Length: 296
View (cartoon, rainbow, N blue to C red):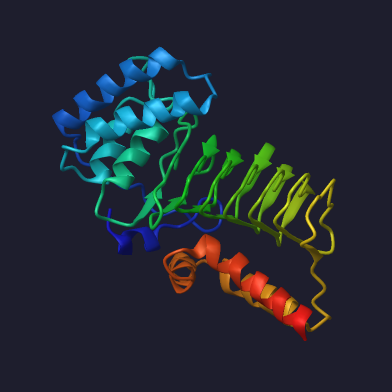
């Protein structure tokens, strides 16, 4: 999938849906790789939430896909072929897809398949990669990701233990968004559970969340309605647009730049403007502003 195609996709639930795309027939070698990966994956069990289990599944996927020269669309066609299959079971195949993303020369990907059981999209997404989630409903997204996750879907969790940039325009369920986050997470949508719990990075709420920042030690920035709970950080700010400090003006500018108005390309361009390490650029800028205000 090329970058221009990624820009043209309509985020689910935001605008009139475009006609469904047709996917090419999957490569036989890719199909064999998925089946072998599924057999390996089942050894650990789909309910094993330990990082070692996920790590093993990812490493096996990367080993299998590295020799392959296939398109991401072929992989999507393969996943669709097995969406109702028990053998191979594609429940955890978000990990397999992410290994393909990471080994592709492309840098921007859009996932738009309506397969509710598919889990762990963007697991360990590499730095420099951007994944746009454009389906209606999915499960865990972006666990341990170092890349950029842009979510328009309803997800169970988003960006757990992520060190990358995660932006939510959709809905995150009763669990969490940016739990143990070490990167930057920005919410424009709805988080029914906790946002930024135990975060060491930067979490910013422009939308709605049940509660925010419990035991967080990094930047925790909320709006007038954000409910802060047990925040341990000294960098807690409730944004007041009427107060024209350098810090507030930076956050207001950030809010404007990443607000979604039907143009995914604009969001991608804004991410690019943040440089090679966007998740670190924002907290670094905020820290510099705080130092200047302290020394003024």
